[in-house]
Structure formats: C-alpha cells, structure tokens
Image (cartoon, rainbow, N blue to C red):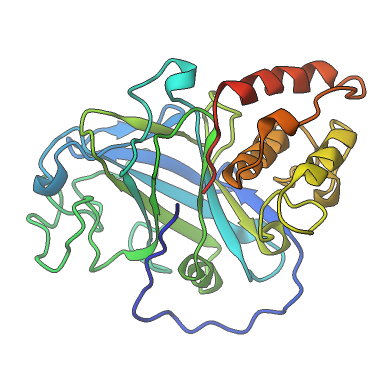
Length: 327
C-alpha cells in the first residue's frame, strides 16, 4: 500500500501536451548517481543503497543511513505528464538475507531537493552528512531538528520537498519493487530547469537493527534494476498492462511469453522499455499480477518457444516460492 503525502502548495508548471512518448531513464545515465550518507559521517557507495534509522526519534545513532539519488534528465526528449520512481530490493528471506528487508509498518520517505538548490548536483566522493543542508539531528547542520518537523527520519521537512511516502503492509522480499508515484513527484519533475533531479530517501522502521538494501547504480544483486524514472506512456494504470485493457492479467503474460527475447516494445511486453522483452519484464508483470490477487497456478509456463523455455521455467520456480509485492 502506498500513501501519498500532499504538499500544501505546488510550484506552478507549464501545461504539458496530452500525448507524450513513453520514456525511461535510470541514474546510471549522464551525471546521475547515488550514495548513502551515514550519521557517523562516512560514505557508502558499493552497489547497495542501505536505508536505516536505528536511533528513531532521537536521531543520534551513527548507524543511521540516508540515500541520495541523482538523475540526469537531459535524455528525456519531451515534457513529463506522469512519472514513477522505481527501486528494486535485491535481498530478503527468500535470498537468505532475513536482516536486509523491510518489515510491515516500515515507511519510506521520498524527498526532492528544490530545483537549483544547494547540493542538487552533489559529488558522490565529497558529499557528507555533516555538511548536507537537508539533514537533521546528531552530526548534521540542524541539531536538534526543528519542533515543526515531526518525521523522525533525519530529513529536514522545512527545506526538502516531501514528494511521496511508501508504507509496507507486509515484509519485503528479494526482487520486490517499490514504486513512488504521486502528483507531487510529477510536478517536481515538470518544474525542473537544469536537467538534474535529486532525491533523498529516508525511512522510519519498526526494527532498528535491520538494514534493508536497494540496488544502486553499480549494484549487481537482484535483477539488477538501478534506480529508474519512468515517464508518460510508460506509466499506464498498471505498468504491465501491455494490451492496455482491464489492468494486468494473464492476457498480458501471454503477450510477454509470445515475445520473450524477441520483442522490443511495450505492446510486446517490454515493461521497462529497455528494448528487450526479458526476465526483468517478467518480474514486473508477475509482481503486478500477484498484487492484484492473481493465482500463480494459472500461469501457463508450458510450450515456451526456444530459446526462452529454460529461462521462464527457472523464473516459474522462483514465482512459486514466494508472493511478490508491488506498490
């Protein structure tokens, strides 16, 4: 379940044409990147985005970790009318990492750095917790946090723009996808004037000793799917409704299966628009299908044309081991 946090006011933006092409970009492109800053003033940049709030409301633990995500928007050729920021969780109980997942009740917070604001184009090698102007609590430039800031996530609500929140209603697992999708996120991207969009990712968690991880721009675990922005026609009602009819269902799987390793368009099953219908698109379809209550026993993995048979059979085994979640 996703809960959107609505801002009191939004930046005025120009009208966007009703029909815009589907475009996708990840933070591997151009000047994009990501890094994790710890309250003990160390930097983590090793393939994982570890997000953690061990100290909770006191904001004092050196183990607290906040993620920074930067996207180069110069590759987008048209304005943004709809958007999703998508992250992948590569670890969980099914992968043998029970301490690297989120629990039911954990809540993620997605903030944006104002257009042209300080550290919007941060340097991964030199940015620090102690000097980053959007943090609060021990070791930050704002300690203690302002009384008006009621979210104990280490991020200053008075200067960063809260774009969306994401509440886990059950524990996360390996290969799960987290989707941030809100009018505030789209308005934030529309207001950009310098082709840079920078986000802050924080968490409020129920077990302070767990350290959940996302795939980063250099990650190798999971699919792996780096932090990704999907825009416009790449954001249908459901991201894997390939025939754009009645949401994600078995008909969409049949489209994906028929074009597995041969298709190249969304209509052929390319959910992430990377030009290939492959296992990444299958994971996205499966997550949507199960989230809507689909029965995995009804998925027909038989008679898959070569060379895709073995690949989808392997994925079928994974699919029967756990119930994927997509919010």
